[in-house]
Length: 145
Image (cartoon, rainbow, N blue to C red; front, top):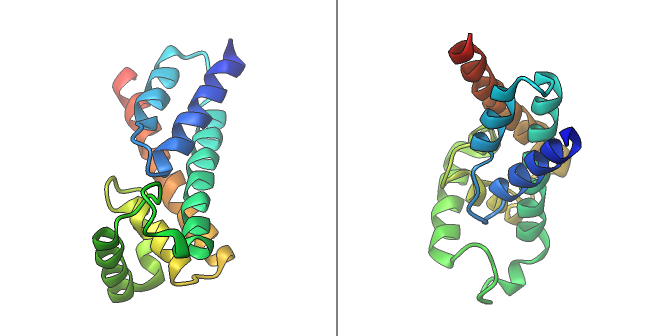
């Protein structure tokens, strides 16, 4: 049963980082509140799933832009344009906001479009995602106290 919890968390974190609406924080908080799971493993699983989901966005931006007019492409042209302007204004450091709902997914996609080097992308996104989940876990721990 523990493995199913970690698997569910990974999947919800992965999906939450793509353009699929999902809330991995709720899953993380629920699992943490049970006391049955290691907080360190919860952090590692959620962070890696969410970071990997952002890698999918980067890949879509980097290699699939030619299909942006297709209905399945995750970002509409106006959203992509707005995110590109924002990214160009603030630079690669804007990836530290990749955890923010609504703007985070387009930022990671635009990073691929603008050909941000993968390793720089990965480090900044992993830092952002991990810090966010650390805060969520800290809130649960503090609340249950």
